[in-house]
Length: 135
Image (cartoon, rainbow, N blue to C red; front, side, top):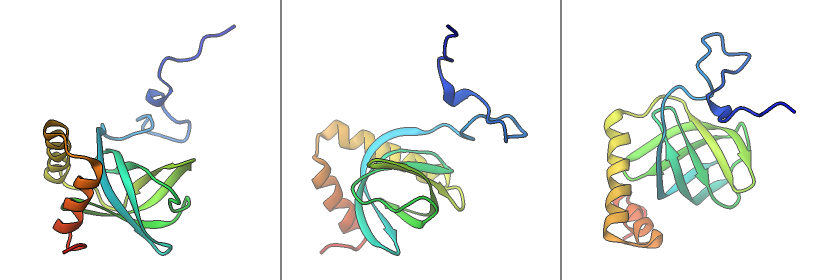
């Protein structure tokens, strides 16, 4: 019996002429509360990881594959399209890469949240207040 590759994600896709693998850039593994806006409405979600080109989201009733969305987390508002969806998770590919400073700011917020021990609900309330969604 042949053994499976240790990490399939690093393998190049057959339709990728540059043989880059599945992702163009590394992802920051963070867990932050966020919102995703689509034509179907606004959903509170968890941002599980993010790169300059896309993000992995977790939540109930996420938009379907191919739907346009706006991911809002902290100071980041990223327009994109749902590229894949499985159960309560989906991947979003951004229309334009977010800036490196925005990516670093999210990583710092995630680290600070872990360090001071606030709950996801408290972090979401803070994010909503910063985004003008709450008073």
